Amino acid sequence: MKYWMRKLAEHHKTMRRRYPEERIIVVFDVDDTILDLRHMILHVLRSFDRRHNTAFFADLSLEDIEVSEMEVRRMIGQLPAPAKDKRRIMKWVAEHSWSSEVTRAAHRPFPGVMEVIQWLQRQSKTFVGLNTGRPELIRHDTLYSLKKLGGPHKARFDNDLLFMNPSGWNENIVAFKVAGIDYFLKKGFRVIAFIDNEPENLEAVSMFDRTGDILLLHADTFYNSERARIPSHAVSGSVYDVKELRHPGGSELGEAA
Image 1 (cartoon, rainbow, N blue to C red):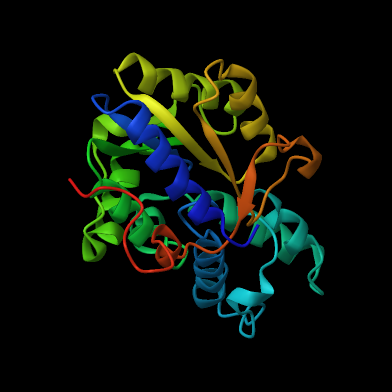
Image 2 (cartoon, rainbow, N blue to C red; image 1 turned 30 degrees about the vertical axis):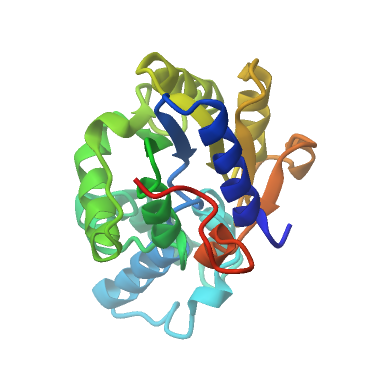
């Protein structure tokens, strides 16, 4: 859907009027939703070349990376390189992709997403929460990176509005996505929207939501679960255009705080 951000703004306006005294929150996934992990993949692959004096990725560009971070092994497996080099590259990627240095320095947001987050945070009694499959052990690095990236756009990220996976890497992600929504509800927020790139996460939250208040938005970037699992009432998009948060005449759909 071309105007998915317009749908979010319209839904925000409806929820703000329905629950005028409540704190409402829009919940975002992080990886492949806020952050374009192709930048991290490119950074790590080029660092392999620099460290080992090779040129496997000398001509690789961002546009050439058409897989998620979870599928990068498949991309490496297709390289025209000896098997021993592929094993070395895979080991390098596994060891460095989520290092503190890379998490803090190599992540980049999708264009426009920080402006959308900042717009939401300017609206009356409106908050932005994060619900990520990343494990707790990289909480500090995650917040450092997001604050650094959001700062120039005046987008704020707070520790108590970040829910992370308490299990570990890639463990029980779908279940903890639901737990993340419940976390914000128990903190007294009215969850009005959930944005995630994985269809299975949207499906799970849809089944959890008994109020019908949660607008589901599919970040149509990179994902591993089947697209058919996106709930029929969800809206999909990939361009974060803050102009969609305004009426055609230019007035904002929400009310500034």
